[in-house]
Image 1 (spheres, rainbow, N blue to C red):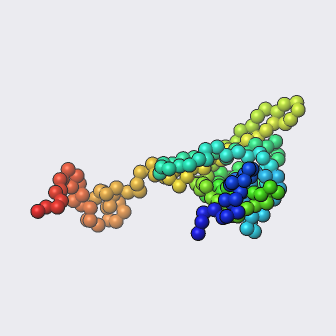
Image 2: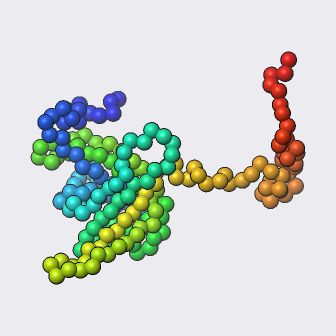
Length: 196
């Protein structure tokens, strides 16, 4: 099975390539689907809500290492006009904290109709959202910006392991278990392998 369909490959080689990003945000209470277009988009019976060009994603790129990398999703709107998912994320930060987000790329034809299936390019875990607000001017009101940072699947690799291979740690977990009682004696031991 090919990664891209033949229709998507034809779209690549045309003079004009139309593409946009889709986001799947898996909050505690519900899963929301959004995209940066101006109308509700139906892809494979999933309805993507429009963000009307108010969103931007920073940090997307090819990662060839196993290091944690983060993306930042920023949505700006006039106060009171935020998208539904933003108010959901802001009501309680636990709605978004450590919940999955998937960013996909979707190709379109000249009439902005979807070509093929969305291609996932990032998945990670959302961090609590941050809010900032610009001062209002005479022409427009204040602009509210909501920023959600998401780290890829490797974000937990820098944390220490849950336990230690020590007798004290083993006794805390399983009192009376002596499996690791001699582990400290092996600390500076040299083993020769194979021993002929």
